[in-house]
Length: 217
Length: 199
Image (cartoon, rainbow over all chains, first blue to last red; front, side, top):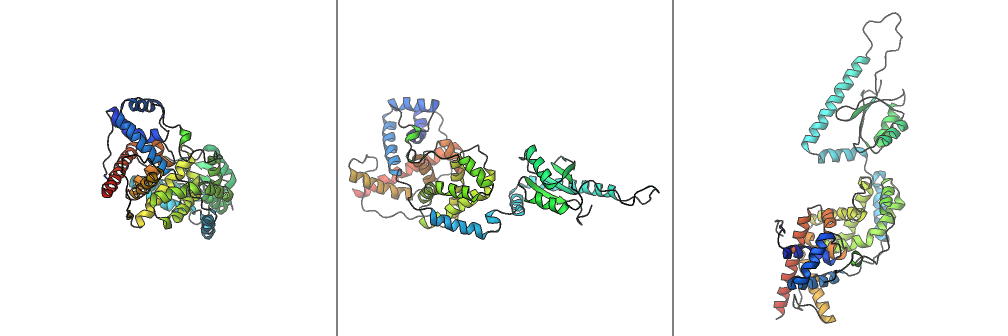
C-alpha cells in the first residue's frame, strides 16, 4: 500500500467519494451528512458507487463466529493461573517497562529528580546525626531523622486516594513535593518495612524507597 | 435521496443486546475481579474472533491473538480512561496484537485460485451471481493488506464511525480515509481482473 496520505479537500464529489463508506454504515452526521445527501441527488457516479458499497456491506455482513468461548477461555484461565500474581505484572516490571519505553529527555528528568531526592536525603541524614559535643541536659537518644521513605505518586492520583494510601500505610508527609513531585514520608518506628511494602503494592505509587539504605532511622 | 441507513442499521447492530455498563465491568476488572473479566471475555469473544479472522485470515493465529488481547485487558484495565468506548479500547488492543502477530509470520496470504468470475462493477442480480460475486470478493479481500481489511471490517461490519476507526488503528482520520480509498480501488481492480479472465 502506498504510504501517501491523500488530501481530500475541495470538490464535493471527492468529499462524497471518501465519505460514502460512513454514509453507508449510518455514522455520518450533521453537515457532512447533509452535503453527501445533496451530492447524491445530482451525481450518477456516486449513486452507482453507493449501490456497489451497499453490496460490499451486505457481503461483509456474515454472522459472527458461533464458536463457544469456553475452551479458549479455559486456556486463558490456565495462563492466568500459571503466571505469578495471576497475570498481573509486579510493580517493578511495570516500572522497568515504563522506563525503557520512555523518552530520553524524560529519563534524564527522572534521573535528575532522583539526584535531587538523594541530595535531600543526604542533607536530612546529616542534620539528624548526633552532635560531636553534647550538653549535659541532652537526652541519650539521638534526634530522629525527619523521614523514612521517599515516594513518587502517579501524577493522575487524586488527593483523596493519596490520603487513603498514606493512612493505610501509617505514613505522614514530612517534606515535599519537590519540583519533580517526590515526597518524604515519616513512618512510626518498626513499621517502615510494612509501609514500604504496602506502598510498593499500591496502585498509584510510581516509586517508593527507603531514605536510609540500612533501614534504620 | 433518502438517507441510506440509520446508525441502528449497521450490520452488527440489533443482533446484539444492549451491553451492560461495560465501563463498570472494566473497572471491576481493574480491581482484579475474575468474574467480571470472564463476563467481558464472553461478551467480546464472538466479535473479536470475527474481527481477527477477517483481519488476519489466519485461523491458527486467531485464538492466540484473542487471548493475548484479553490478557492485555486484564493487565491494563486500570489504564482505561472512559474517554473512548470500551469496545474501541478493546478493538484497538486487538488490532495492535494482530499486527504484532502478523509481523512474526509472513503476512502474504496467497489468494485462492478461482475458476469462476463475474463482472466486477455490474451488480449481481441473481442469487447465484451474488454468491459468485461474494466468493470473488472474499478472494480479493485476501489480497489486501491487514490494515486495509481492518478498515473495511470495522466500517462495513462493525459500523464504527471514521473517527472511531482512527482511534482503533491509532492513526489520523485522513489515513483511515486513504486506506479505505486504496482498499476499495484495489478490490475493484481485482474484481475487474476476474471479470476479464472470465471472458
